Length: 374
Ligand SMILES: Cc1ncc(COP(=O)(O)O)c(C=O)c1O
Image (cartoon, rainbow, N blue to C red; front, top):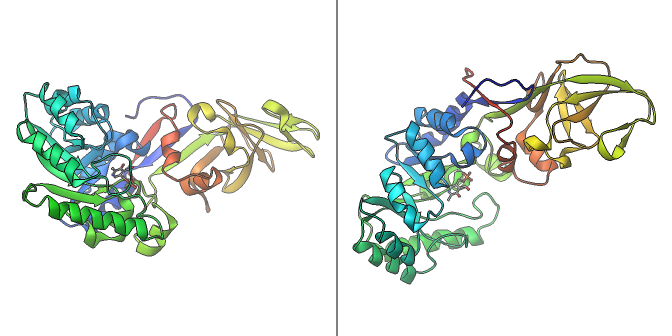
């Protein structure tokens, strides 16, 4: 939630961009297909309650999270919206999930047997099938039957069956086809168990954006909702115009001219070759702006300037080409005049994926929510 803050660095979250992105997907999935807004990990670092609210306003039907804790927090704000926990909860926590009316994921017969001892009320569950991710889920029809048989004498009600794709964002078909085929084979196998109201779902953003006709009853829309593409391939192939919701802003808190031979920051890893203007920006690895971002760049007055010297816990330094006053706006991620630094640019510098960037910029950075007009 937005609250008063005093620091000079903050993340701007554009809730209209979230709404726009959900609408793009909803265009592919008009009712009765359901769109789950995936808001785990504090909505990929964007703010769970605010993003969930915007997503629901734009037509998302349900919410998905990883943890029971995340589900309970959302439930207190959204009393009537279906919420699915994608991760595993412990069997003794089943009554807590039931009391909060959240749906859980299960895939172990022993789990069902253990949960029975605790559960007095009905609890809605989705059966997770592992079609090739090898993370969570039943691995054979026998395992599935063991789960479904154990459920027959319990308060657990089968509401969904799903799987998760490992390579839907990639230019490869072997794993993807194998997963899709396995999923369909399981569904045929369980025909007698799966009633009309059991929800079948498979797609993440990549799957749902690329293969809208193969996505069964529902899709789980995560990264795309934040305006980030699962990969360049998905962007190019689908052409779906997404708008990034996350930007990161700061202000210069200090500026000084240093002489040739002077060094900057811990370890003296940067040495000035001539007289140079060095600005200080109040963001550091204590915020998740990690030391590997030395050598990356930020925007001041619409132009890129390099981060020089080691990134500290609370600050980093930037080499400027002229004097700029204290309080000069610094855009770390986002648009400034005609220049732009994207989440993908940061991810590329760090040799990682865009998902990781807003997640790693931690709660020490306040989130400020905006409703920009299109
Ligand atoms: C089971 C499951 N479904 C859906 C998603 C959403 O994926 P994406 O952010 O690629 O849309 C995730 C995210 O990791 C997930 O673990």
